[in-house]
Length: 125
Image (cartoon, rainbow, N blue to C red; front, side):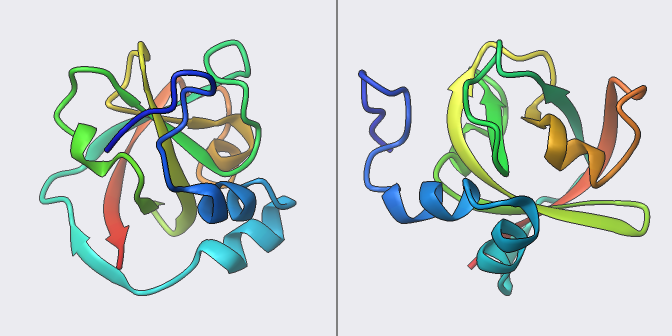
């Protein structure tokens, strides 16, 4: 997937980016859908501030050089215990966890006092 040098956002994703920028409840409803596949093992997921990535909506940044770079440009369902959240994998970055999500998205899964959690990851079809 090509990355736009000016924005750092994957090319051809304008609709998904607009949906992920909606207020949280609307973004969750708009991004929801059936899963196409599931990642076989739980994945470490952390949260980031706008210092790591400027988007504040329902977005994920994938660790550059990490095992999940192929999820770039996909809508992901992340589940932790009895909670779940949809996020759009918008960019690759120098984040510590394999997947880093916006603070608001992380808060839907766990308290911010947790630096990372293990999540079941499904790719929306």
